[in-house]
Each structure stands twice: as C-alpha cells, then as structure tokens.
Amino acid sequence: MSKEHDQNQHHDHTGHDHDPGEQDVHDSLNHIVPPRIYIIIGASLLVLTGVTVWASFVDMGVFNPVVALAIACFKASLVVLFFMHVKYSSKLTKLTVFSGLFTFAVLIALTLADYATRAWGRW
Amino acid sequence: MSDSTVTVQGAHTAHEHPPYQRHHFASMEQQVDTTSFAMWLFLLTEIMFFGGLFCSYLIFRNWYYPAFVEASHQLNIFWGTLNTGVLITSSFTMAMGVWCAEMRKKSALVLCLVLTFVLGLVFLGIKYIEYSEKWEKHHVPGFHYSLQSFTNPASDAEVHKEYPDDKPLGVDMARHTELYFSLYFAMTGMHALHMIIGISLLGYLIFRAQQGAYTTGHVTFVHNFGLYWHFVDIIWIFLFPLLYLISRHS
Image (cartoon, rainbow over all chains, first blue to last red; front, side, top):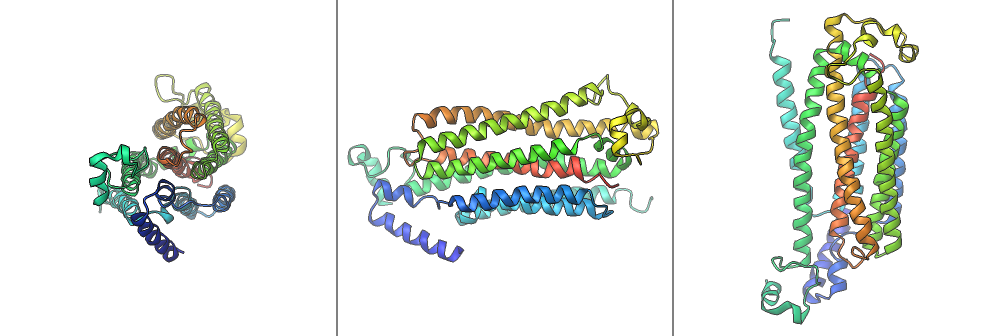
C-alpha cells in the first residue's frame, strides 16, 4: 500500500514539473482518503470504546489499567494514522510525529524512573 | 528552482501558480508540507503540555492510591462513555469535512462542519452536567471542599450503591481526594478549553465555508484544523480510561 503510494507521489511530482497547471498542482498535494476508510475507522473507534468500558467491568487485578491503556494507545494510533492522514503523509511528517512521541516517551520514562527509585532501599 | 525565478519575476501576470500560493514558497507542494509540518510541531508541544499533567496524575495515583480510587468512583461511567462516543463521532464528521473540502463539495462541507460544531457543544453540555454534580457535592477543590463522601462512604447513597466495598478512609488519606479532583479539573478543564477554542474556530470555518473559501482547491486551513480537532479527541481517548475506568476494580 505504502509502496504503491510512493509511486503515486513520484508520478505526481514529475507530473507537476512538466505541467504546473492549477488543477494538477492541487490534486497532487494531498492523498485523498476515501470516506469508506473514515467510516471503518470511526466505527472501529466506537466499538473499541465499548470494549474498553466492558473490560473495566471485568476484574483483572493489576491488568485493568494495562488493558485500558493498551486499547487507548490502539485507538489513538488509528486516529493518528487515518483521521490525521499520517499513513498517507510525507516522510517528514512521519518522522516528526515519531520523534515527538519518542521524546515524550523518554521524558515520561525518566520522570517515572526518578520517582520510582527515590526511596530506594528505604521501604 | 525555476519555479521560484518565475514567481519573483511576475507570477501574477503569468499565473504560473494558484492564487493561494505564497511567494516565498517554490511550489504548492512545499507550502503544504511546510504548513502541516508546523501544525505537527505545535501539536507536539501540546502533547508535552498535556503529558506533564498525565505524568503527575500517574505519580500521585501511585502515592495516594486509596484516595485516587475512591475519588474516581465519584465519576459517572455512563456520562464518560457517552461523551467519548460524541467526541469520536465529531472526529468522524470532521474527517468527512476534510474529504468534502478536497472533493470541492461546498454544501456537504458546511454540513460536516455544522455537525462537528453541534457535537462539540453536546460534549461541553455533558461536561457541564458532570461539573455541576461535583459542585453540588462540594468536590471542587477549595475552601468548600468536603471529605464526607470519603470518610463516610455510606453518606453518599448513590455512589455507595454502585461501589458497596468502598471502605471509609482516614482523614489523612481522604484529604488526598482533593488532589485527585484538582488533577481531574485541570486535565478535563484544559481539554474543555481546547474544545471551546476549537468550537470558536469552527464557527469561523462554517462562515468562510459558506462563502466557498475552502472548496477552491485550497484546503490547508480545513486540513490543519482537522489535525487540531483529532488531537483534542486523542487527549480525551486517554483521559477517559485514566480518570473514569482504571479504578473501577481496585
């Protein structure tokens, strides 16, 4: 899918160089995501909301938060990839999003590591 | 490169580029890449901002676990679920709006934006119902904060029926429920502020969309507003389980 898209982009790009007509310039800019995808993703998000609420009523001990956050991460990924078009975006956008989330993960991990080890040996 | 030379020398007579292309960009492609890159950078600063709140929530929940569990039992899962559904649906209508703008369907775009606007207001309306319940029960942090629901759970009949196993907390631990509600109001309040800003912008978008501003091929503003709206949705996708759900069984 992404390979096919890359080829499309390449094709559009050369098309632009040869013929910078207004219509062509516009149509090559954004990958237009069809409504079918939006409907599938929207429905999946609603179903997953139901699943996470249902899961909260099942006693899984320490795994309740883990399951809830895993579902939330999956839902957020669907939103980012499809509603926010990152799946169809340029490498620059993909790299920006990924590096931002990575930095965020590092900050959270370091902070939690600090708080988790402050009283080391004193419990 | 040749594009930029043409642009500088007199693009307005030649019409080598669409009217919405700024002159400091070599091509529309570069302009679109630049604006969406900038939008993503802004959203990343927002992630860091909300991330600080999420992180402090995790740490304090760990420290004052019994207080955070019983305080979160005060939240109504029904309203939370309904609001999640409303917000996800509004994200869907916003995504459809972007598609309508790209396909140059003016009236469908206006309809999508109006639906998103209305669903945003419904979300805030439900949030108002929840907030006013906290106000009535004196669960808003401040001078009038009451520990009664936590030092004596049986006095709070409605919640006690739902969570009969909740034990009375000592005053020292019960005090920390105020911290839970501080974080609750900070996080949902910041989220609601983002919704209010988004809804205001949507009002402007609807007005301009009716004039046909976004169905000429220049979809950048609708596109980037969509990114903002979906980002606000993602924040709620994490707030909902963290505040409402994960403490049901604890």
